[in-house]
Length: 293
Ligand code: HXC
Ligand code: NAP
Image 1 (tube, rainbow, N blue to C red):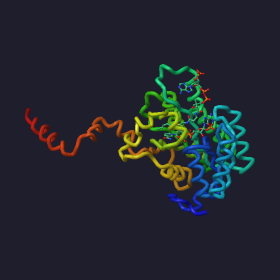
Image 2: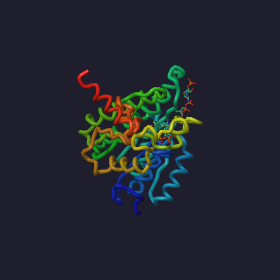
Image 3: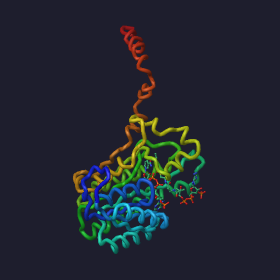
Image 4: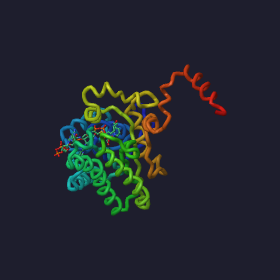
């Protein structure tokens, strides 16, 4: 099966079994498709079995690959344990875990209940912990090597962000988990890395983070120095590389893929982007004129 616009060569993921939480929709689904096209077999999991089954049928038809859809609420340890059992029963092995499942919404923090925090932290942080722990324990007990955990975090994991505070807290925890296990579990042959995406349009994120007219009011592309949002293919290339043997010396890395978005927000004088080229002559004249004053 020829790959469509992939950075990696055909068959680059041949023989790999990759589990993607949140794999029925959005970026998880796109990663599943990319991995399949490179020869991997995949398990996609989330809470909604009908969504997973429909995605699995579509991806199998499009790629000729094998997809196992498994309902699993990542907040529930028993679900996660059963999901791993089903993966092993079907494929006999698992080589990579992609922790993509997430929950998020925008809200002033003072309007949130404790339960709202618990829900997001439960999905994002505890969900990632539960899956990582289940797969890690299995790999370590079996003495299996060359395993990969790839966590999907966000750039506000290190900057923080108002109005998505439960998500920011949880993603910061995922970042700490990534860097901690990269060191602790390297001796077992498990590499742990993360991707921090900028804006990549998906129904799940856009409906919850830019509902109604907010999508016109706050054009995400305008925040990005490259002047556009991300294409799924750009992220799936990176994810394919990070779960492939070609990235075998990359461990504990968080790769930002955001067109420069977070740095634009961070640099103190980046607002000078708004200065027209013609104004720069006058500005330079004013500043040089202060010499000696
Ligand atoms: C305030 C809210 C809320 C909202 C829910 N709650 N939505 N509070 N504002 N918009 C509160 C509820 O009142 C309740 O607390 C608690 O949160 C749990 O709500 P439930 O609806 O019972 O939760 P649940 O059914 O488990 O659904 C989880 C969910 C939902 C996160 C709320 O949106 C979901 O299923 N999301 C999954 C997909 C998703 O979010 N994708 C986007 C990922 S994007 P009380 O106290 O009332 O009981 C992403 C991108 C980041 O992470 C960066 C992008 C640029
Ligand atoms: P999405 O389509 O809404 O993906 C979230 C997935 O998580 C869904 O498939 C959802 O499926 C699953 N999920 C939610 N709660 C779950 C639970 N308790 N157990 C198991 N699965 C659960 O949104 P997306 O944009 O593709 O996001 C994917 C990842 O990218 C997330 O980690 C997100 O934080 C990250 N991200 C996205 C962007 C972006 O611009 N899109 C930017 C930065 C980071 P069910 O509802 O069926 O459970």
